[in-house]
Amino acid sequence: MAGNRTFTMIKPDAVRNGHIGAILAKINEAGFRIVAMKFTKLSQEKAGEFYEVHKERPFYGELVDFMSSGPIVAAALEKDNAVEDFRKLIGATNPSEAAEGTIRALYATSIGENAVHGADSDENAEREIAFHFSRYEQF
Ligand code: UDP
Ligand code: MG
Image 1 (cartoon, rainbow, N blue to C red):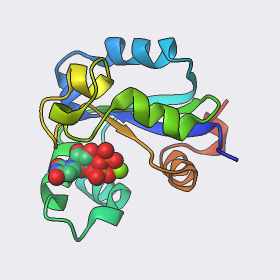
Image 2 (cartoon, rainbow, N blue to C red):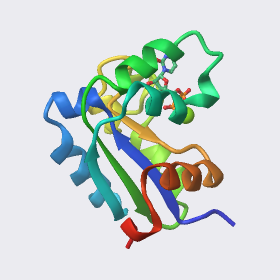
Image 3 (tube, rainbow, N blue to C red):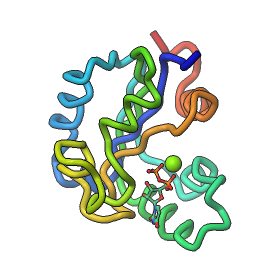
């Protein structure tokens, strides 16, 4: 059975471009409940650790530089079928391929600077929530 939690980050490009409010509104309108949230900034080291699965990919260095380039909003979200439904709400990694009305179609600027992160499995959602929040910070 699919889990009911996912993890997201509003990435530095979207924060810089003033889209935090609009993106949170889309998330709420789509029926997700925010169960933990913080405005924070990742060090290079923390960004590298978060994206460790992509270490061998050619874009890893650029991704780590970008994700540590400014503040982000990290949040844990709840909804039935959360992981899959949230991936649908954000759209494809490359905004030029993202379906109309998705968060990336609306707010991403490039395949790298693509406005939001969404966990890709229940297992990774739990790992990513634990990476950013202690149990005490989750409601
Ligand atoms: N990324 C990039 N170049 C690429 C593919 C991905 O810079 O060719 C970045 C982009 O920010 C993406 C992140 O690396 O969101 C993680 O990649 P993944 O394939 O997991 O995409 P996602 O799950 O975020 O859609
Ligand atoms: Mg991914």
